[in-house]
Length: 182
Image 1 (spheres, rainbow, N blue to C red):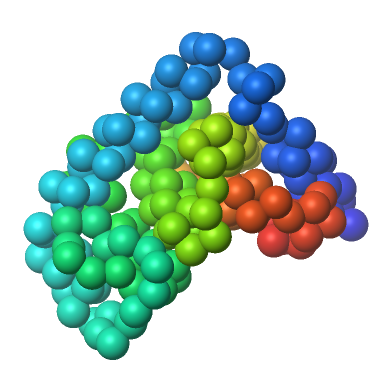
Image 2: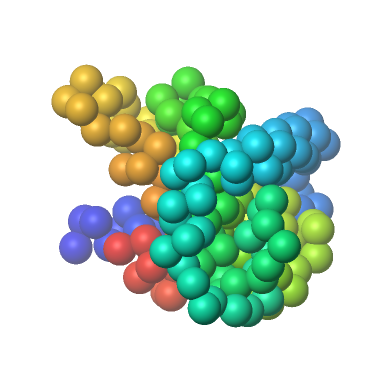
């Protein structure tokens, strides 16, 4: 029950994130994170790890772009390919509160969903900020203790950031967002 109370509180905050309420500085840094991740994803699209993932995903077609390739695939496959590319070279952004790379778990998922469902730029940035904030707030709960035990926050906490951003972009209500976080 306590975990659902926490999930519900996160869901409220995720749903409350609105582009028009974001400070200009937050929008500026969101755009910087977005551009940085696009750059490292395109560069990482040529890495062997990304080629392996992309080659395993054959026959997929859909509306979502596989970065650095001349093909569109399903949203799920694009998120997998682009997520691999985003972190392949390990030059993606870092955040000291998270203790890891915040954008790689978020942006590939919402790029794919934006292609599939359509989204305005403002909705996209608001979703990204909601995911980023979720990662950082959750990281404050687990601190860097998990890192000293061999866990990588980019994965262990990043999944919640990606989930939060996807829920926000899809317009899920608080209840569905809390269930997705659970």
